Image: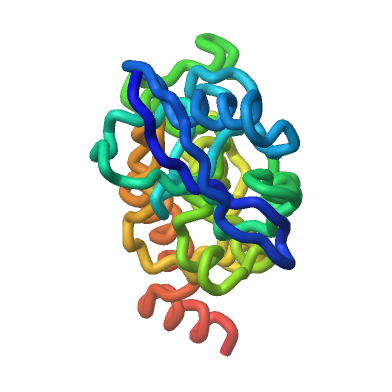
Length: 246
């Protein structure tokens, strides 16, 4: 058993500071284990959100040494023994208390997405589709809504455009609907206006932090951007629309 030094944010969205704690760690421990030990021994009022401790519920997201992580999947041994491990709340969202953030705007953004709208079944083969079509939609269904991609996105993290920009998590959700070959809903106007997809400049930082390894930028955001560009910014189509209006 060895001792490690942790610094954990204590406070709310108005004021707070990093509090140091010394934790006895065993082999294989993750950061969430250390947080629980701090709760047991030093700070029983430390607020932290968690549930499954298996990397599937997405609720224990925080920033470990400044990088968005699932604390239940982040091993303490990943950090040098002489390094202090700093645990802070996700920066992109208001802090309720300590490590718990207010992510309610995310759910409101989710509600705004036009729902999945399947076409009628074919009389002979129902909703038959090719395997590659299944795989494209299934990748997007892997999202656990941990909001790490939302946290690292500069549009939300640095510019706080939560109401104008639904963010990577919900572009993945929208792509999951739109790439399903039986879906017939047109979400292009939604993506341009309410979704704010034009704010994204495809830095791929969201893909880098995804614990489910979804290729967010290449497989969801870029194809959705292409639909918006084809509809609203294609010069030939714009010329045709202008001629038709005249």
